[in-house]
Amino acid sequence: MYQQWKWIGIILILATLLVGCSSSLQPQAAALDPAKNTLKTVPTEPVVGKTEIVLDLRDQKDQPLTGAKVEVSADHIDMSGMTLGGAATEQGNGIYAIIADFNMSGTWRITVAVRKENLDFKKDFELKVQ
Ligand SMILES: [Cu+2]
Image 1 (spheres, rainbow, N blue to C red):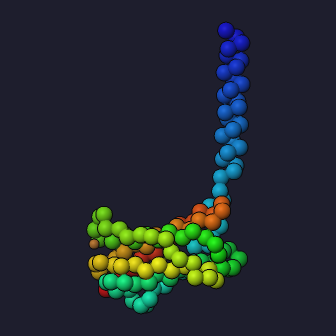
Image 2 (cartoon, rainbow, N blue to C red):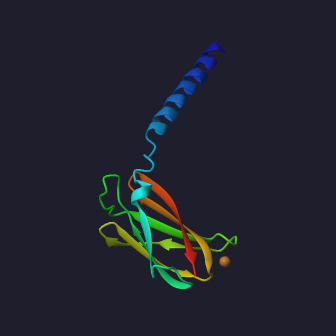
């Protein structure tokens, strides 16, 4: 009986150690400085129909972020369940672009999700579509 409890104790200690180790290996979030990452549109005033969303992504040293996976989704804030999304294409020099086909005017929330190695960064922008 005592032997059994000892093993349970050892297993619990090991489990705690494993949890401790894995949490110290968590990806470093937000290695991008949100202030340095911008969104522009073409045309500059977004319109119903096709609008290009152009992202300029830079790291904390203000260097262009290359080779990242960038997912963009757009939510029509005024309505629930109206969402567009897709992967932005890398244009070089930290620029990523995607064409959004806004089917309604109003306020849209653009969520940009950036992944590269252990980098996992998200930023929201708001667009007024005319
Ligand atoms: Cu809508």
